Amino acid sequence: MYLGLDLGTASVKAALFDADGRLARTVARAYDVRAPMPNQAESDPQAWWIAVGQAVRTLLDDDAKSVHALGLSGQMHGVVLCDAEGEALRPAILWADARSTAELRAYDAVPDVRRTELRNPITTGMAGPTLLWLRQHEASLYGRARFALQPKDWLRLRLTGEAFAEPSDASGTLLYDLERDTWHAALVEALGLRLDLLAPLVPSSATAGFLSSRAAKYLGLPSGLPVAAGAADTAAALLGTGITAGQLQLTIGTGAQVVRAEASLPASRPALHVFRSSNHEGWYTLAAVQNAGLALEWARRTLHLDWTEFYEAAQQSEPGARGLTFLPYMTGDRTPHLDPQARGGWIGAGLEHDASHLARSAFEGVALSIRDAVRLLTSSTPGTLRLAGGGSLHPWWRQLLADILQSVLEIVDVPVASAYGAALLAQAAETGRGPRTSIVSVRSIIEPRADAHMQALADATERFSAAYTALRPWFSRR
Ligand SMILES: Nc1ncnc2c1ncn2[C@@H]1O[C@H](COP(=O)(O)OP(=O)(O)O)[C@@H](O)[C@H]1O
Ligand SMILES: O=C(CO)[C@@H](O)[C@H](O)COP(=O)(O)O
Image 1 (cartoon, rainbow, N blue to C red):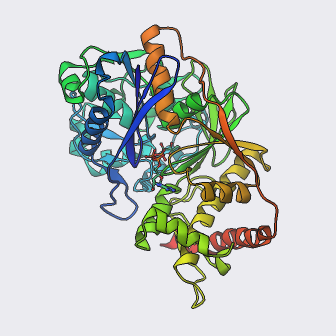
Image 2: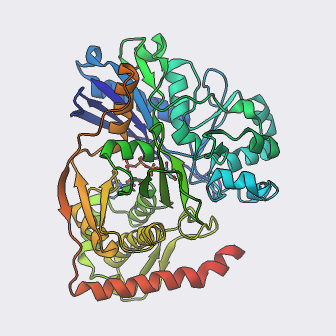
């Protein structure tokens, strides 16, 4: 058996797969994302550690002795500032954090050629700008830290006692040279950041340490098991769902990611990311929707509804939510607007609206934001997208997505694609043979409808775009 651990933004997913790639069981444990100040998003790594322990111990049952190796995947871009043993010096600063707006200017001073080698827009929430913020605002912690790690690399340090990074997460830090496929030492130096904070790089499918006796006891596993370097959650999901060059995937979790796997290193395009995949040679272009499950969760909590009630309320409203618009930009927007100052909320509420319209417009707003990302990535309406992620499971929501995207959605039979990708990397690390091809198959297909309610959705689309355009100057003055 192979254990895949996906350290997501909202929860950790632990999943056990047999050597043929069949899912045996999966367990999730949630933790909090906090905003101590406006524009911030943090999580406590100790809460991650507790959730990992609970999830793995619950998952294992009697299978502990049959586990051959572990692999990790995790939320991208964030920073855990820690000591040599992985003791976090402060809460992790996450991808959804926009505190580093002023620090983005430091990248302007870097010669263009180096910026091009990053192949990515300069945005808040990425490790580079976050480290610039930490150097400026928490200089003593910054000076004292031994490592600045991405979340799953921090988890691996806690599991093995060794610190490593790997290309799929490192390429999402704005400190990585996509052309030479290594840390961008010259850029790190030009920014005045500490290169020694970045861990040595190994391939995603390499063994990057062995389970320490302390961690083994904590998880209920044998000590000495190989732990694969693993991959960023999006890269792991691509491996898990078996997407190949040219195919498109939509993952919906806390954020949503629209991804096209690429056979060669793509040129950079405004408001789109280019990251390394988990293969030795492979990349993907990513349109990043900053607020998906995160915005729905916010709306649901604000309306004091549980998920079942939230879906029921939304289905009681007519399409278009009787003219109500919801902007989901709770933590700013990446694709397409690259606007960390943007914010969310309901616009156009009148006495004719009730909770059902508020709920329906929240789902429509998130779907329309995903539509914007899809359009920017593909410049058209894509025929088919493969769907993954814990925020994409409800049948009514899937149909609404297909209708708003006007694309066919393929539903695969592995609910935890990133954890599956992590387990495939664990198997590759143990066998030394490179990741096996995913065995997932398409279980069902959601066809977009083209009936009467499409006019209401078309009107909602127009209102949604106009609302952001009208509000952009107001957001920038906030
Ligand atoms: N029934 C649901 N419908 C839509 N979104 C949901 C539902 N339940 C949870 N979510 C949202 O989906 C996200 C969890 O999905 P998951 O793939 O586990 O995310 P992550 O990898 O970010 O932890 C959370 O942001 C949560 O608010
Ligand atoms: O920000 C990105 C990609 O740019 C995400 O891949 C994050 O890593 C969040 O993932 P989820 O927690 O939403 O799955």
